[in-house]
Amino acid sequence: MNFALEFKSHKQASRRSSSIIAYLTIALLSPYISVAASIDTPKFHQALYELHLQTTKGKQLRLEETAGQYQGSAAGQYRFKDTKYFDASNNRLLSHVIRDSDKPDAIHIVEINIYDDAGRVVRDFGSITLPTAPTWPTRTFINFHQYNKELHSFRQFDGDGEVTYESCTGKYENRKINISLDGLDIKPASTSSAEYKACFDGIKSDWASYAIPH
Image (cartoon, rainbow, N blue to C red; front, side, top):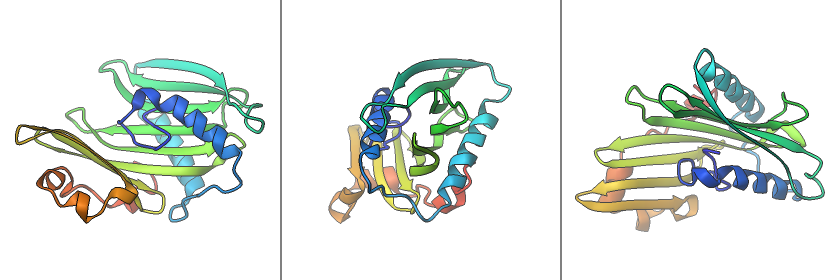
C-alpha cells in the first residue's frame, strides 16, 4: 500500500501490501499490541474510510486489485481483497483499502492521500486493524509533507502524537539528499545540520487537528 510495515508512507510503496500482510500475520500471534490512545482510534478508522468514499465519489477511477489469504494459524482463516484507487484523469493514487473478502464491510486497512492544487501530496493518513478486530486499529498514522525548492520531506505522527518517522529526499545546494530517520534516531546529533533544517523547519505538527481526517 502507500504503506509499509514500518508505516513509512511514500518510501517503499511497491512493498507495502506484502509488508502490511506480514504485519497483520505477526500481530495476530502476539498478545501485546500497542494501540494509540490519544485519539479515538475506532472513530479515526471509520472516518478515514468515509473520507475514502468522499474522495473517490464521482471520479473516473482506475483500480488495481489483488486478493490473497493471511498466513499463520490465527490469521490463516481470513482472506483479503486489496484495492488501490487511482484518479484516471491524472493517475494519482487517491486511496488504498484492504478488506475482508468474505465480509466487504470489514475494513482491515485504509490509506488516503490528500493533494494540493499542484498535484503534490500534502498529507496522508493510514489506519491498520487486525482481521479479527476490523473496527479497532492497532496502528494509525498521519504524515505531513513539505516542499522546499528541490526537497520533499514528510514527518509521521502516530495516534499518540509521537513522531515515528521522518524522510527527506531531493537536492540541497547541488547535493543529493536522502534523510531517513526512525523516531528513536531523531535527536540533536541527527537534526542539527543545515540539510535537516532545510528539510523540516516549518513542517506542520498540528496532528491533533486531524483526529477526524480531512
